[in-house]
Length: 532
Ligand SMILES: [Zn+2]
Image (cartoon, rainbow, N blue to C red):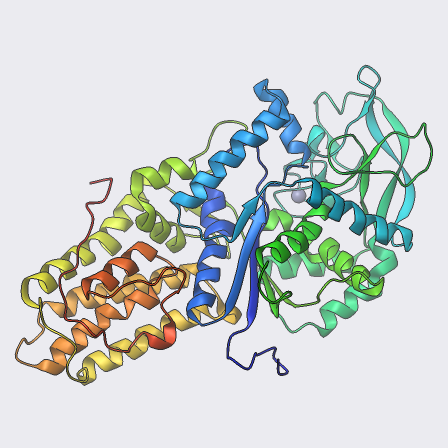
């Protein structure tokens, strides 16, 4: 039973969380981790402590042409590259404590699902056949598109690949990149028919969607929507003449080059497939979908996914139309430079997590996440922030509590000072975790403030005043719920410090945050961090 807001009778809502499937051409780097990956994990965890029924999953993005170009550059074959990247990314997700229900590679069932989805829309006339000119290699008999073609973005002049500009997040049509000297641009162009989604033809669907929507967009995505709607809407290739990707046979001409589904629109259908799989065994469908994307996915997300979703519903495909929230992030710079996998100018997530430790990495990356604007990662600055805002206050708290509060219990109402502090901190965390104002920066900042206040105030807890002692203990204890989305290991150590058990698969509910622990304080055990 759901009411108007989709609130189920038991209080929990079904919330699906996903992040854009990573291109399997290497491990995750800190740009991925600080943006969509950590954003979605902290979101999924925060919705769990709020009592919602969360499904969280995604896959690798095997059908991107970036896989082929990287494999060529590295002198390997795409399948080996994907297999290796899948292993690395899976290991990094584990190291980072990213609690996905599912992270898989596209398989035959997936391929059939995607092919059926697009073929259904094609059969219902959603796409148009259009002739475009693409660079053509007579030697290999291949047309070059997407990652094979580079140039300058016709909108922002950044170096870009054909299809989408990672810098401004806008599309570019075949042939629209300002040419630069690369192998594909030097090739002669040849006309070839492809299938396109002509967004202008579906303009009213899109404008109605944005006019009637009440989900606020982050400013960078709002700009993409506004800029795009202001002009003639583009047509977006749904297929390319390519054998890489999910092939479709819509032309019925034996001599026509094979067409494969463009990997960017495919992502929307992938979300449908993987999130349904992530919900296997539970009630199907969701009340709300939260997707975390880099701004480079902004245009596809705001226009192509939305058009496909609305067209699918219109043409009778069994897609849900949940309230959908897209949380974008900007670029994370590595000491002033853009992370570049291809130039090897990159800090890998797995290596960083191993050297810094899970909680500390999660904390400092959340604190500096490029949520609303470009942010910069500098290893010395990150280390200094960790010392000042995490390690030092925690060490003070452990030393003071372990030295003077061992075997004391929460056996009285907290003093007025602590009651006010608990209420204020809880409010800060709640604001960070609410989907309307969700922010991992705010969550990490709330945690830093909580630790700072605890470290300062615990120095002068009056041991004779049971309200003061109980307040201090309770303020620490609330972190087992409040901090669980950001620093799950710390939350576990706080649970253990009071002799309580963390129930596997049962997140500590926010509603229980201020329910006093049943046991006395036994001592907070902090690990020596790897960097020490
Ligand atoms: Zn651009």
